[in-house]
Amino acid sequence: MSALILDGKLIAKKSEENLRSRVTQLKKLNNGAVPILATILVGNDPSSATYVKMKSNACTRVGMDSLKVEMSEDTTTAELLAEIEKLNANPNIHGILLQHPVPSQINERQCFDSIDLSKDVDGVTCLGFGRMAMNETSYGSATPKGIIRLLEAYDIQLEGKHAVVVGRSPILGKPMAMMLLNKNCTVTICHSKTIGLDKIIKNADIIVGAVGRPEFIKADWIKDDAVVIDAGYHEGGVGDIELQPLVNRVKAYTPVPGGVGPMTINTLIYQTVEAAEMKLRNNV
Ligand code: NAP
Image 1: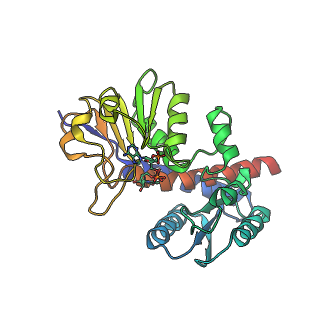
Image 2: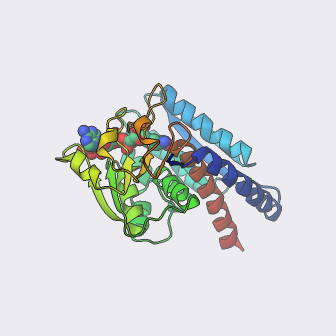
Image 3: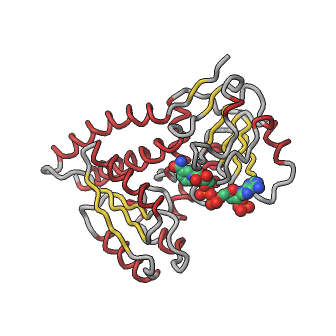
């Protein structure tokens, strides 16, 4: 039996069709103005530059605009905070993306938290996280929210399932665990100090790999009929989970590439359109 492929590329493409018509509608109602996502790139990291480019290309595909802010490697926290303040105050900007990671001299948490909640479309603020965790209206952190949207698109049953999330970073593992809990999963969160990781994973109905180490989670730790979500991406097209031996025996899995990555970008754009619609409703 071959597993169901959770095709993030396909679901993101379908979502873009829907977003394109919502942007057209917003444009009509807004005297020709379209939603705008501001992207902030600090420093010279080539992968970060690629991610920002992919995000602004996705804006273009759905008819939105993006405003690129590029800042030098030696930017200070105060300079970045001042830039975010300008974008917060700009009524034409609907969403703000601060590309992670920023250079080490910057207080990233302080900068994330200075993003206005109504423009936090990448779901990085503490306040947004808290609201999401309490099941209140919020924009979710884009990668875990994208994973939830992908699972929903394929009608994967979550309620009552044992979900194991490996990784507890503020943008991925931790919000992922809260989102799965809010879907009535029983959740175990694992991290670098976890003892007996393989045995914990053996009990997982749903496993999310968010470790940042190539094929760190071994195929033989994963039971037959599990749902396997691999958030990692490394050179050579491998993720954080050893996927190849699993494709004929698990229930479903996300391919690498083409699984979680496209859903992350799509969720950022989706939440920016939601923010623009919300602003329009509030102005009426
Ligand atoms: P991160 O901030 O480096 O966090 C990695 C997590 O893995 C930490 O919580 C760490 O535990 C845990 N970990 C490290 N070694 C471990 C071990 N031996 N056993 C168990 N847990 C261990 O990384 P991240 O930003 O969350 O990213 C995780 C992965 O997702 C990376 O591969 C990244 O490239 C990918 N990612 C993909 C997207 C996308 O759009 N597809 C977006 C973001 C990230 P401690 O907390 O104890 O240190």
